[in-house]
Image (cartoon, rainbow, N blue to C red; front, top):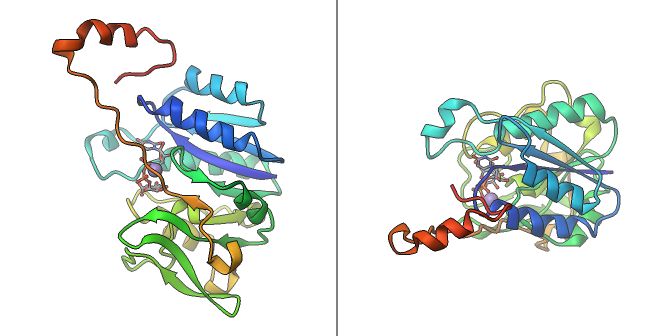
Length: 242
Ligand code: UGA
Ligand code: MN
């Protein structure tokens, strides 16, 4: 079983993002979708998407700490991913964990690949940073380093969507820090992973099968000229304007 962990939060783009992701995951056999809501309670519109997908799922809620809302560079999706990790530790003994943001794009082939993860697998992620790709560097079938435009003294300079973990290795010490940009690295370090443990996937990390796509923020129309139209839009049940 693959446990696909998606942190999410309310905004106008949330329903379209999750709808698109649901439609990808609906093609994947033996997958369990864990949606971790950055909210005090599980939202009804998210829950509706989950139910309609027909996928096995778990919907949990765990909001970011209150200090986070004041900061622009706050680590995103940490409290909710941590809650998903606790849920997995309590409820699941075997399977593969993969973190997938609600706005990423995934090739179905990636799921066939990560299913084989024995300890930790890694693979390239497209549309990241100034190099365009973040990927492990593979020599003779072994990961020897990383190609990433933001090394930042990280042991594992990879994106959240660039690795999968066998749940057997989710030890009690495994955690994700509230440090923007360092969530992935510190999480992998907390698992006690070594470079030689990494299983390179996607044809020795030569293929991009997941992209860090980002959706342009919906710009509210000018309220002055469109006040009547805006009122109509806010009446749609699954259209969130903030
Ligand atoms: C990148 C990485 O892809 C994230 O996995 C990482 O958490 C993030 O950087 C970071 O270092 O903070 P990016 O595309 O820049 O992500 O950020 P978002 O897509 O806006 O957020 C990442 C995930 O967290 C998304 O699934 C989003 O829905 C969720 N999120 C975002 C929350 O749960 N709460 C928020 O307030 C914002
Ligand atoms: Mn994103």
